[in-house]
Length: 545
Image (cartoon, rainbow, N blue to C red):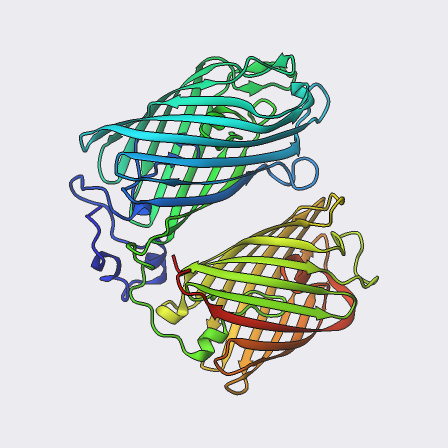
């Protein structure tokens, strides 16, 4: 990869087809070049939780959040999930430090001694990494971590424990064969107590790992790694004995923008922090987990987009950044903008949505909603009529306003009931959002979507039209055929009035959906009902990252 210069992002952009846009960037060719000052355009510093000798450029702040899970069709409910996240800072090119957190709370999918024990691990870790040698083609680093199981709870370990300390020492070595290819070798030492609550625990583990990363362009990378214990045991078997098994990971990263990358993985591991990275999923380490990680590196010194300088939006284009009644839109808020929406309607439905765009091509959405309590809705699949939250990102891959044939985004939300003292049902929801502005007045939305909770799985294909009658008035119609565990389509129709350029808008619509947001738009009731909503969009100076 050539040393970064702003023109390298854009010089072939306007003539490129959509497929080339998705790969994006300039292919890394020629002699070994210097590290790019844009962190996400370099080879990975980690392959999920497997450490490499790479470090971020000085001044980099990196934030990440993600989840991996087992196949929802295997075992009860929606499978086993690991949620994780963290952040790091690199004061210079050689040194970085950070905080990692992971949380796992599920019964095992496969039996251990004929039972399905709960396993709860809430872990946070402080770590530091120093690259002590770098010759260009070869680099060596050392990482030290202190990890703490703030909660460790399972019958396998004698019940509940708190503040169980562990740690790790890793010495990753990286060989840079070319700009495209890197090979990694990482010897590691992990410390765990030998016993917890008088029951056996992992003890000390030494491992030797190997990995490879391939980066065909500035926006795309692939990687894989295997970390195998050479002494000690890292796996609990189906007979509750400790065994040794390699931890493997395969994945890739696509940079949505120079500041935000989306990584996908499959792995048999169940640890994200440095010391838990050697642990396999329970039992036997045979289950495959798949998941995503969103990586964000804020900073004004990095370009906002690979599309060149964004065009100024018309008022109509800004109005279309708002979601519909039961369908989302592929457009996202402008950087640094908030939107707050509140709605209410018949059958006790009410909610609020807070959306924020920290940067171009990305939006974070947080919703609180109480679904309709109409008895004609199928009670067997309504997760609850109590107040719930849903939280997650919306990421834009294509933008019709800036040269693409249409706009395309993806959204992933997780939610749960929040009433105190009630367990609630965890819900996973994801949709792909396609928006096409046919002309200055007519916009078409297409949205495949899926949702899962408990033993329920739903899929739908949302279709929507937005027609601008006048500068302020929009007519909106939506329908979503539903498949899998329900087959009754949802629909909504109504109008939206935008109060000029004030940022205020008012909705009124009729719908048969029990809610407005996420899975609420996928469950129908027999009785149509009316809802109204008020929204306000505003910018906050200094909140564009």
